Length: 350
Image (cartoon, rainbow, N blue to C red; front, top):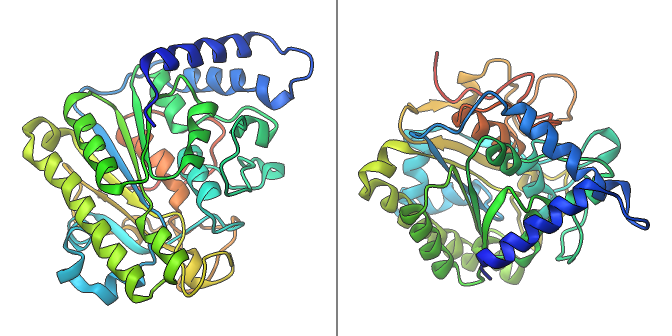
């Protein structure tokens, strides 16, 4: 599903109207979208998206880092290359509360924990719920990396293999310039490649669902799941080749890659299980030298096999993605975000 310009304009107009008044019967969370948009504008008030920097964010749904060891460089050459040539770790963490797809992806784009009572984004479900927004779930304004980029004059596109991600489109209609939903992963990646080449987006967010789909059907870390990870590696290679084949993209695009959860056996639903809460995190591209992210960030705590809380020194989390992206684009942190604000994740050595 590609949102057409006509629909985009209509959604933007509706969002603008919704933000200027609160009709009877609406919840405070609906009206608070205005507050998050105002905060995003304030954050980017004196900054603009640089003309020479773009970010390609990739989320590999259900990527257990152990699969990379099992498959080796021969079966997953693209991921091994990005890990080796970039600033990376195979021992990052999901949100503490949940190891589910939609809550963790919402954390990736907002830089927030899940628990709304503690300032989180409030997305606790993992299904397609038409009409819902992040703001309504949180009960207050929630900005995102998309709204910060938009406030700075940039555009963002989202490519996803699951319809539940239309949540982003509804929550930040001005920030998500274009959203493409396609369950065919090859078609989705081809669309993302075309968009990278033809459009000048500050942020391109690509969600690759194949490992998660195979994990639920056959079991995580089974043969079919590992085949799905290898196939996804080939899709990532297509995106990387598109960047390297174009001189402009090669100079400008930085890749940020992580996962929403891992998984082993029949599911990934236990937030206390190492196989579920451990994910990779890497940053690769111009200006990024090979490094271990924990060595680059001594203020971050390498977690070993522990689950970790939000208190004290933090591990690298998939929710760091939001403020890593804004940092790479020279913008301030996402307003209201928590992860990577007091302890920004360094991806370049001093």
